[in-house]
Image (cartoon, rainbow, N blue to C red):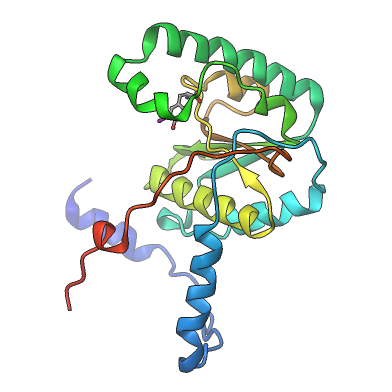
Length: 233
Ligand code: IYR
């Protein structure tokens, strides 16, 4: 298709109906206090590897997934799907499959440099959290959608699904729940275990629950604002 006929095709697509958007303004004197409050909450979040078995209501997970689904996405394609698992057998099967992959990662696939980077975290192939956490959320990415007219490509899928996952992690944290951003590699086994179609690829696996009573986390320091930002004013 020539450029001219391409732009004609675009021009003929009907524009989206618009609606007024006027969210309530935070009064100016309150803006800083509000964002600081949020920052303190966000800063208290820690990735957790030891979960309590305490149940978490399905409705809580549903609300968190609605928040994740509110993320911006390329061309508003919403190229994600979330599988939330509390079923014990399914969690056990995921654990077995993940540990097989992780064992080969730690024993053969990881480079010495990577193992050195992980050493301070003390991680190994054993993934107990996959069976102790009350929920596992598997985030899938859709590089294309299957439509009655055939496959339809999605755009900025990595960015979109990454942002949605960030929303999800932060929403769960604000509800007092901990997550682990877990990426067993390769994760292909998750598609089959979750019964998802071929156009979906596992993006990340998040165990979700309350931290175990005796949960400890590494005493990490975050980079300072000066280290992570530059202002051009
Ligand atoms: N997927 C492995 C290894 C791992 C990799 C990174 I990067 C981490 O921050 C933590 C672990 C595992 O889950 O053990």
